[in-house]
Image (cartoon, rainbow, N blue to C red):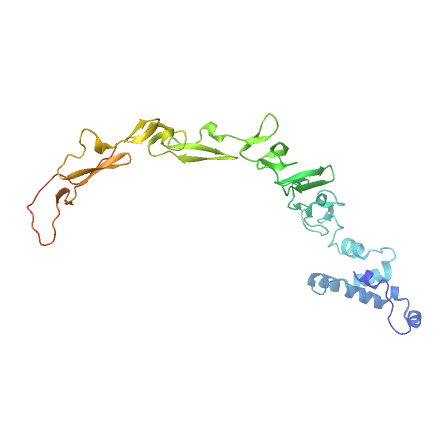
Length: 317
């Protein structure tokens, strides 16, 4: 500020003694006042410079008339006279104390909205390590290394961090959790352990539940299953149509090798599929309007041969 910048200066001329005798002391001179005003604001701070220009007469009044009674220019001018400022650690029209107190707003762990101004609401914007209305609580991933009514120190573990089960912690194990994350629950020993969501059967009939640390997912049963308890055909509750239980797993029924022929029309072959089968025209025959007829090569004539529908796919109801 200009006062401090000019505190040890003098008139700077060649005859300081004459100047101070003739022009009065530099310390209380108008020349020093001009230098103070010029140094009150940064040149780029338009708002500050504009305010000083608007109230230059008030600053002159303070300098020549009330400076001895009110030695703090900032307090007299900015806070008490034009009322655009508040003392540090206070905010708003009435200069109320910030949350956490005016001495250490937000307990030193954040910024008070409106601090030092006649605006704001006094709420705290906490540093990343802290959370809560007063910035006393530790954010997720940090633990408290000091906590009392006026001070809080939250520290992050670099190696290792909080346990994956912890929302907040005081150490690196799952027993050091202050709060458990979603999907975890405290056991009788006070440690955060995985909550087995699958125990409540959250998945649909055609799915099985896969429990994971802190969560779960629903996976589709194998196509061979009607209901299942896990991955694969060996986990089926019952077998789907077209499958049969063999060696504790549901295996495909090869309908094409059954004693009773399933493709009964002429010139048809049976093709087995997973859980079913289909009837297709034999080699050398092709489908013509639902019947299998001999394939006609270019330039050849064949005797018309009519068969039953050529391509039949079995569909289980």
